[in-house]
Structures are given as structure tokens and as C-alpha cells.
Image 1 (cartoon, rainbow, N blue to C red):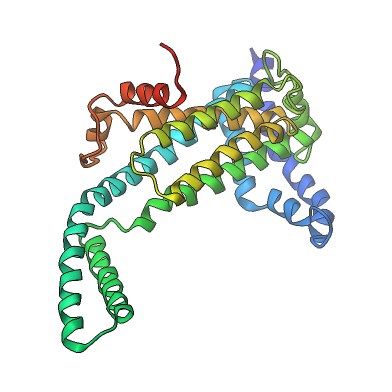
Image 2 (image 1 turned 90 degrees about the horizontal axis):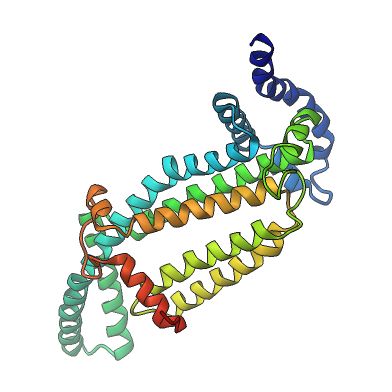
Length: 315
């Protein structure tokens, strides 16, 4: 019992002891920031990445799980504790914006009439009248955003938190996999996998993790696209861009350590689950998301129906 207690504490202790030596060894690399990969190495040695390393070590030491399970649980924990509340906040803002559209449309028609009358009185040209209309419409819309506390920029908070967090955890796993932390930690990762990816420091030669990652990301994109009835040209371009990114991530994930591709897959899968959860009318009410005209009482049936119609799947 005594020996097992000591062994359970070894990973976290070695992790903590390895950091000063690793920083000293990595200092010459960081100094050459002008060389190839200099900025990348500096980013990999940044304070937020160290926080992510310590967080992973703390989860592993507290739960006593193998490293593959620690990575999966950490992804689920971060997604649930950080990004899910932000996604619910984003949903509230987008619902308020959608509910504002009829009022904005009505005010725009009234403003267009007023500008037209005023333009005839003052002899404005069509260009000048259009300028005044757009200027006053922007002012009116801004006042509505302030009134309802739903400026569209606030809806981007999720992106500004999620992407840096994803990058930091990915780099922390990369440091562990390539031995940047210590040879002991790298050794734990090399034997900390499961199933076909037993070595978390090596890329997945079977391409199962990368392909699953691409499929999950594509499913997220298609589910999001299927909910949009009136799609603008920009939205079409954005959807196609994310489709391309989802496909490109497959070969990228096949060249990085399995620990990173496993984290990416776990994070995307949990994100897909949260996306579907936020479609539930019951969960939306729990999150105080206002009901909109586009809301459905059968969202999951509608998703399946939309995907079936779009891709002509046969039931």
C-alpha cells in the first residue's frame, strides 16, 4: 500500500520537478526567436501553456486515470465548465438579435419614408439621401442594441475564449509528447494510450482518430448550416470555409502526436453534444434563452429531416 501511494504521487512530483530544468534547456531556443520555429517555441513556452500543463497534471494526479482518459476528461471538463456557459450566453444574445429584426425592419421603413420626405424638401440627390438613411439607421440599430444589451460583438466572446484555450492545451500536450517537459513525462505518454493508439507520443498511423475528427467537425458544420433558412452569400462562404478546414484537419491530425488528435476529437465531440443540447427547448428555457420565431418544438427531428432532404438519404 505504501509503495502504491508513492507510485501514484510520482507523475505529479516529476512534472513539477521537471519544469525548471526544461525551462533552462529551452531558453536557447526561445532566444533564437528570429530562426525557424522561434515564435512557435516561444508560444509553446508561454505562461498560459504552462498553466495548461499544470492543469493536466493536476487532473491526472487527482483522478489517477491513465493519460488517454485524463485527456478525454480534461476536454469534457473544459468544454462543460467554460465554453458551455459561454455558448448559452451566445444563444441568449442571438435570440435577442433575432427578435429585434421585425422592429428594425419596421423602423427602417419609417426612416426611409422620413428621409425621402426630407430629401425632397432640401433637394438631396439620391446618393445624399442614401447616406443619411444609412447613417441614421446605424444610430437607431445601435440604440436598440444598447436597450436590449445584445450587441453582436458580445456574441463573439465564445470564440475569443475557446480558440486560445484549445491552442494552449494542444501545445501543452505537444510539450508532453515530444519530451519538452521531461523524459519521465514523455515515457508516461508513450505508454498511456489505449486500443490502437497505445503510444500517445506517436501519430495515429491508422488514421482512425484523424478521420473521426474530420467527420465530427463536418457534422457540426452541416447541423449548423441546416438550421439556416435564408442564407446570405457571406454565410455560404463561411460554411464552405469551415467545411474545407474540417477536411484539412484530417491530414494535420495524422501528423501530430496521438495525444493532440485525441484531445481534438474529444473536444469536437463534446462540442457537438453541447450544440445538440442547446437545441433542446427545455435546456434553452433553463438557460433563459428567449424564444424566437425560428425555434422548433422538435429540433432533433428537424435536423434529421433537413440533412435527409439535403443529401437525399433514403430512410
